Amino acid sequence: MSADIERFVAGLAAELPGWLPGQRWFAGKDRPITGVTPLGTTVLLDGDPLLLHVVVEVAQGDRREPYQLLVGRRSHPPEVPAASWIGALGGYEATGDADLTAVLLDLMVRGERVGSLDFAREPGVELGRDLRARPITSEQSNTSLVYGGQYILKLFRKLSPGENKDLLLHRALQAAGCEHIAPTLGSITGELAGKPATIGMLQQFLSDAVDGWAMATTSVRDLMAEPELGPDEVGGDFAGEAERLGRAVATVHADLARALDTEPIDDDELARTVGAMTERLDDVAARVPELVPHVPGLRAAFEAIRSAPANSITMQYIHGDLHLGQVLRTVNGWLLLDFEGEPAAPVEERHALRSPLRDVAGMLRSFDYAAQQLLVGQDADPLLTERALEWARRNRAAFCDGYAKVADEPIGDPRDHGALLRAFELDKAVYEVAYEHANRPDWLGVPLSSIAWITQGGE
Ligand SMILES: Nc1ncnc2c1ncn2[C@@H]1O[C@H](COP(=O)(O)OP(=O)(O)O)[C@@H](O)[C@H]1O
Ligand SMILES: O=P(O)(O)O[C@H]1O[C@H](CO)[C@@H](O[C@H]2O[C@H](CO)[C@@H](O)[C@H](O)[C@H]2O)[C@H](O)[C@H]1O
Image (tube, rainbow, N blue to C red):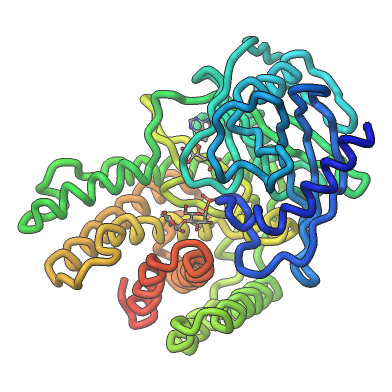
């Protein structure tokens, strides 16, 4: 690497503490950055334009996390949003520059290795050439580029050594013939701490798909427009879709249990689960005062799982952050996306075997979110609040009905595991309190009101 590039990267690293917090995908917005150190730079295009893949370590006190960046520099840069310029060195975040991102697909087509980066197609996959990319605009924890409306390349922002769980589970499900995922077409592997690390995943882009959040919130909007009618009477009832979604999630769980490791849950595991949920609660309550009044009710709900029948659940790989924004409805049915798990959780935790009821709980939370989102920032209206609750109840029940039709014992109907399901739902809501506090403070009331409702005995 030339001295010019080395100087350029060192200059970028100095600018990053000011720039990173403005990026949607940067997960460390909750505490100040104390330093940024370049860990590795790969030159993907040399000269003018210059395209660099840069891995940096971001220090926030004693927390140190690696992130990847794609950086462009050229004498005639395209119009990129002001927020893409990293300081005043002429370097910019290049995921929005289609001339430069074309290089990534081209390297995958050719299956090349550049420095420590390996661009590979999945066995038997042929890829089209010369497709230009546009970044997707939805709220994301990572950055995804859509090539010619055919492929979607996800660049994982926060990196960890090893095969990314999203890729691992997609590959396992694909090998198991699962119909509820998008086909994986390729991957990019880099190096971290001397070990291979997944940095990108290419999948088929489903251009005819609508995400579950958009569908569900449209249904809620229809209901709110005619508050005198019930959710089954207005147009756009979502319950049929919720039921099909429940079946799809149960099928994915069954496929994952067949394809990968499982283990029975025992009393020690239940005790560890209570410990982990309580620890998260204490951590979030220390940062978010609005949660404090709910702590006793939450602790009691977590403690209640100690008496769950030991053989009631098998631990397995699960999605880990399932919500309506992670599912797509195509003409053929529901697909699940993004098996990485909670973006804020440490990687070992995301890879741990867990109860599939956690995914069910995540989706139940999402029905509450969809029902409540139109009420955010509005004056309380008892009629609309009641309608929102009705919508949530109806769709939560339909989802569980669908899940129960497919899931074998020991799970069967998720509602038969009341204490566990309730505890997992509340644990997710505590996670959401932290998430909203850090990202969307206006929405904090959504998980908080559910916590109040559930801990006071609401179903
Ligand atoms: N295969 C696909 N086909 C169509 N859209 C997709 C596909 N994969 C992802 N998306 C869209 O991209 C969004 C972000 O993808 P996701 O995997 O959840 O990224 P992140 O990990 O950054 O949250 C999804 O909500 C969905 O709208
Ligand atoms: O970025 P990810 O999709 O991996 O997930 C994070 O962001 C989600 C919001 O975009 C957040 O989900 C929460 O809000 C959703 C509505 O916007 C709602 O449907 C979910 O139920 C709720 O948890 C998710 O928690 C977070 O990890």
